[in-house]
Image (cartoon, rainbow, N blue to C red; front, side):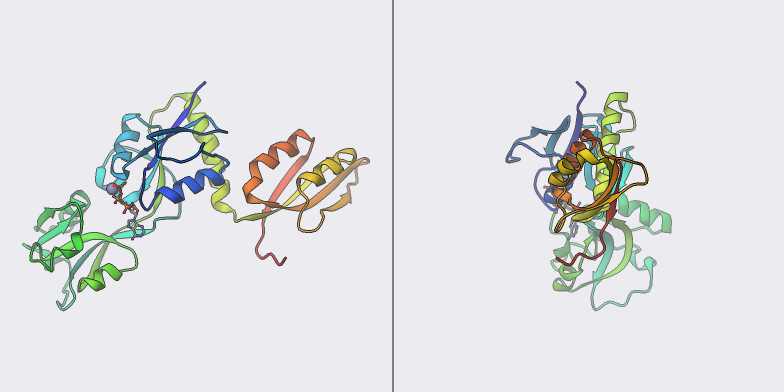
Length: 285
Ligand code: ATP
Ligand code: ZN
């Protein structure tokens, strides 16, 4: 049977949220995630745990079919990939920062200066587009300390709250790229694998749009109502209303996100039809 291979970060800022997204999509891993490769229990999915920097290349090469990674890394690596979905977490930006006490006159300020960064490709493109010649000094970590120790005049780095800049006496002067975690996919995929990706995406999108609890409405034959009530007991007890069609009822209830897919499958098996699931704005228990 075909399997979908997804690459996610082994440890770091993307790791937990990526796993949580899969979990909310009804995909659970056996236990622990210390291994390089893990197979999901309830979806034909294999999870490859790697460094985030390697994810674009693995997906572009087809080592993995899809992956979850920051747009900043996608932009830096430059591989041809399809962004299937923006995931709304690990929001940050790639920005230029200079010493706090310097007046900033505009991008030409950087002419002939030395800029430290772990994102040389994104920076080069920005400078080229503006026609600015500057020296790019690539370093792999602790970029923010470079000006303080005299290694560079400015930095180009990830910023989120800006507190790292402040504690290093720097200020953000140009935002070059806004980033969040994205689901990327290989451009060419076998039809069977693509179908699985679509299935996964369908779930991810449903999760993205929803919160913890949903309002659910469905139609069912009267004799199935007692069984359905057992599956979706609601906050107190579901509302059951007769339909104009003899022998059928409409049932309204509240459904917890954690069991969502499992319950939908069970409801379909019990003969529920016209299932509607609606977000809840406020819930007072
Ligand atoms: P790895 O060991 O996998 O190479 P890393 O140290 O390169 O990990 P992390 O620090 O875990 O990477 O960051 C992963 C991604 O999270 C970044 O590429 C970026 O998209 C996002 N990110 C980084 N810093 C922040 C931040 N301060 N706030 C929000 N998101 C961030
Ligand atoms: Zn990394």
